[in-house]
Length: 345
Ligand code: SAH
Image (cartoon, rainbow, N blue to C red; front, top):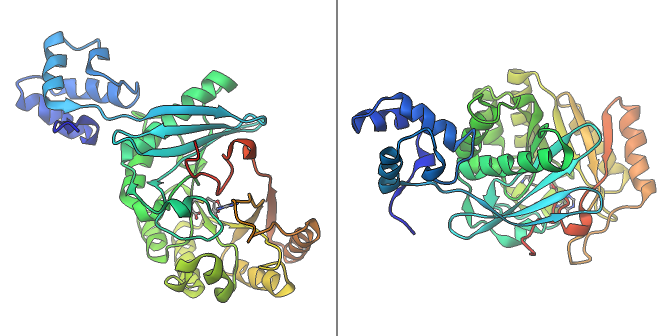
C-alpha cells in the first residue's frame, strides 16, 4: 500500500490550508473538495479545472482512496446488490431497494460486525474493521448513481441496515452523514436517513446529546431479557432496562419516535407473554413496530412463525394503539435481504 496520504481524510479547511502552504490560493481547496465529494472524482487527472502542474503536485502528496463496485446483482424484484471492494481489498455489501414511491439505499458501516446476533449471517464474519467516512459515503453515491440509471430518479432514503453495527463506528458514521447531508456532498435530508442499531445504550444517549436529526430504529426482537440474550448475546451486557433508559433519554431530547424492528420466530417469541412484553416495552416512549420477515440463513434453528402468530402480534398491538407495519423482504433471490449480507459472492 502507498505511503501517500488519503486526500479524502482531509476536511475542506485542511485542503484550503494545504494549498496556501504550498503557495497557491485557498479556493483551490474548495475546487478539489468539490471534485472529491460532489463529483466523486477517482483521479487527480480528472480535475480538469486545475493546471497540469497542480494535478501533478497533488499526485506526489496524496492518493484518492475510493471504493469499487466489484459485482452488481439485480433481483427479480428490482433490488440491486453491490459487492464493494475497499482500497485494502476487503469487501462489503450495499443494497438499492426500489418501491413505487422511493428508492432506499441500505449501506454497511463495518466490514463484518462487532455483534453476535445468532440469526444474522453477517455476525458470522466477525468484525474486520470499521469503515471510513468516505467508504460509507461512496456506497451511497454509488447507489445514487444506480438509482438514476435504473429508476430515473435520485436516491430518496438511506438506512444503515447493511453490515455492521453503526453505533460501534459512531464517529465515522456521523462524519459520513455530515457529508451525505451537506450541500457539498449529496444534499440529502437527515429526515430521510435511519440508523438501525441493536441497541447500545451509551451511544443512543450520545446521539441524543449530539442532537442528530436522523431517525433511530432499534432491532428489538424480544422484550424479555432471557430470550433476547439467547438470540442477541450482547444483551447480557446491555440489558433491556438500560436500553429503555437510553430510549427515554432519546425521546426527552429529540421528541422523535423510535422504530422497533421485530422478527417473530416459531417457538422463540411467538407466545402471548412475548406479545405482552412487547406491548409494555412500547409504552416506554412513542414508537412504532416494524414486523420484519425472517430470511433464513443456512441453519434450520430459526423459523419464521406462521401467519397466525404474526396476526396475533398485529391485533394485540393495534388493540393497544401501537402502530405496526409488516415489512416484506426484498432481494432474497440474490441474498440481499436483511441479515443475508455475508459476502457470498
Ligand atoms: N446492526 C444493526 C444494523 C444491521 S442489521 C442492527 O442490528 O440493527 C439490520 C436489520 O436486519 C436488523 O433489524 C437485524 O435484526 C435484521 N436481521 C438480521 N438478520 C436477519 C435475518 N436473517 N432475517 C431478517 N432480518 C434480519
